[in-house]
Image 1: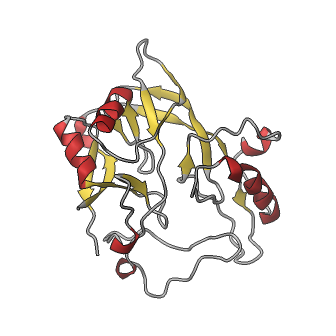
Image 2: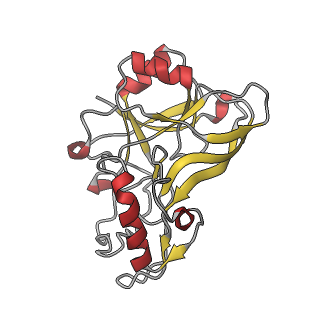
Length: 238
């Protein structure tokens, strides 16, 4: 099985753009007492999560950094509502996309490398082809056109890691308290074969949440169905 990274196909000529964010999110961490870092990363998102059962919704609506004790308190409130095996982290996005959208969208669209949206018809066709791990989530985007496309955002499970051979040999382990890893996405990437999920055709890397990976099965289905809007770049495996 071969694997690929999904990115926007700039040559496709689509003009679709999104100005929005997810409805809720965990705060970042303000000066972790262990590693002294202030950080948050909103590339890991779970758009299916509904936080309305949480009493203090306002605590999840403002982008900010908090002392780690407050982050841990809020994280504990949302953890029961997350998908199984979700990986909560500072800055994590939750709930549907909210904002404005304009332009023409392809069957698939990736306005940011860590987002993937599909037309509903495209999603249904891929599911009929037996592609595994497709979970489409509704959004709350407002379109200017009278007949907007029916888009769904895919929610990804976290699986797979880059191979140690493409990472710096002197990298430090994650912070034991906040989980921060000081890492830079390498230009030459290798997928670690021992971490590849066998039950998914799309997944988000555990160690680099900005990278969405798909299988050859997904690529072949998109090409067979003439689903456009994104490009596929081979990801070697070791």
